[in-house]
Length: 193
Length: 193
Image 1 (tube, each protein chain N blue to C red):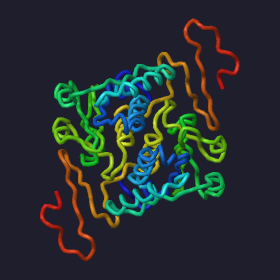
Image 2: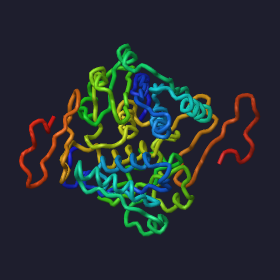
Image 3: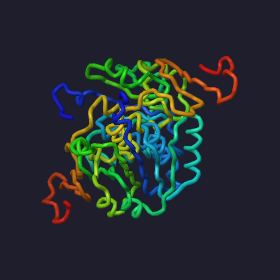
Image 4: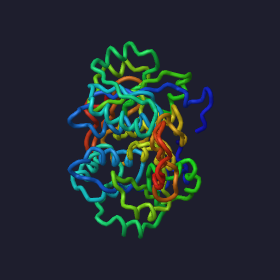
């Protein structure tokens, strides 16, 4: 989708992942974080905090650019009560996405809340909207991707600030462009395939 | 999206998950399977087979209806060579989704291939299209959801054949309708909340 001065991609969108289990869910929460980052969300709030996951995402940013960050959160209820924007809780029990998304106008901020297996009942009332992507059991990663896509559009192939690696579209195989760090010489031959 | 006689929801879409690691990936592959099922794909082929995951999805079908199934696969290369439809491999290295999806016409079948960390190079040439949803590292669950949404549309709230439970849209809290099995009496008071 094209980015205009006030286009959907200028919206500020953040994600809150509730009920992360550092021992059990590292890969699923990593997929939540990578999906948020790939679509252009600014930040993931992770409850409870998981410094290892935050470090992993920071390393992705070192390679692929941008300023996405993971912030640990210990008290999501007070965070939600003070949130200065629109809170959208993604739940299979909510209203149909396509019946409520027309109400989301303006630049944000939007906070998309995704839970684990058990979400405390207060979350349903602290959210401005409880929204279902489908009413079948599925995946918080899938639901998040769809809502981000509706809010921000599919990200164009763009260079993110500070990227060392850039993946280029290709009909077959892999094309990755490697950028020299600032001040270094040109990349060695063969570095860009 | 509305379903017409020849609308997108009549397309036959299947999913192939490559490189599943039964010990390590059960939750991620379960999210792949649930996402495929929620959007209306007919079947997930899982390589290598994982009877426990197949049983889990079969139990979801017992509760929420429909005929989605998980089939184990041991030789994906020969399966792909013989596949009688369009093979779309989802990879961050591929062409932009929105630049290729106009080529996907007709009723299918379509096979959406999602890999794990390492995908054998032949998969790129056995596929008719290698397609990226973004060129940033993210999640095969997110990529699958987006491509299913483009191919089939967001599923409407619909009853699936044989469902015992149906989740209803609600602005707050949870509404689940319980169906009596065929031949049983009416549901007990309070069963539908």
